[in-house]
Image (tube, rainbow, N blue to C red; front, side):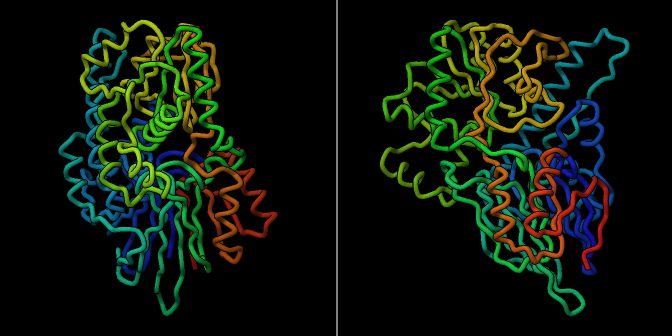
Length: 465
């Protein structure tokens, strides 16, 4: 048995791993790489041949850095089944089509803008909606905890990762040459106590090999109980300045959690009077998918649904679908909150809102999720004096607020607790989905606890005896 780290190795995005067995090969995730523009375009256009020739695939969850290259995979000739939870499949039906449309729209915009520039290389979408439809036709929905066989001799189970709706850890039991080995891919792990979705589950030991995320391996999050106080403070300060609050938010997860928190503030009489706009057709569609999957909700969210009705709707919030209504938000005066995708501010309508509001010191940019290296979102988090939007540098005069309490990623304490639950008897632990600083810190802490842990580089192929 061999494992190759095709992506998310010593980096956060571009999740892709290949497990090779005597009975065939299994691809785990096939995500978009998000980082420097030219590197992202190059890597996202080229799927490794070994991934294309895999016999089956399992998807941990729907975020684009885990699922976004599945249409490219299908377009290149992958013919196997793609296993995922029902909620993940439904989310991908929205998200992958949206990704295709955004690529097409962004390419058209850039090609028009730089049409007279002789040095400009015309931009083409990585894939189109026909490629998305082809990939969706290969999905097989598998509920949590139900065993299935993606390959002969391999029994798989999906456990709740507690990260976003439908997110899963993958537990594989591999029978080969008379021996049984248990392999776990954590996917992206969530945190206990997050609103809406259930807490992450712990696989039962013994675990032979653990591939574990490490995004926040060097830091702790703010108290979840503090998020309402912080959110109320940010809103009141923006109202006092007479400015807008621009929130780059992932259409899946962060948007719904933020709406849920605003709903709670509203219900408790703590939400100041401010118009709130969710300007993302994808977020609107995704929110409808959330309503279809209450089986993924935690007890608190189910109780809220029974007692108060719609979790994601209340007086004062408006969902914006049309392009014309989105443009009108630019001319709106006075305080307002605009929640818009994409989450790392690399594409989508949020770029237009940032372009129009980033240079006004009355405004606030509210960050509620992880921002990968070399993205516009990360440059805003770092409070760079100038940021480039649509090829034009602009002064960053708006206030920047980062509320880590909204993060749906496990922090250092959560990751160590997860590893402890999996057991220190694992033959090897591989840290993935993390920047080097976070991984080195977590690796040292795990070694102190007795784990045999390492940080593989991308394209490394290791034997799992």
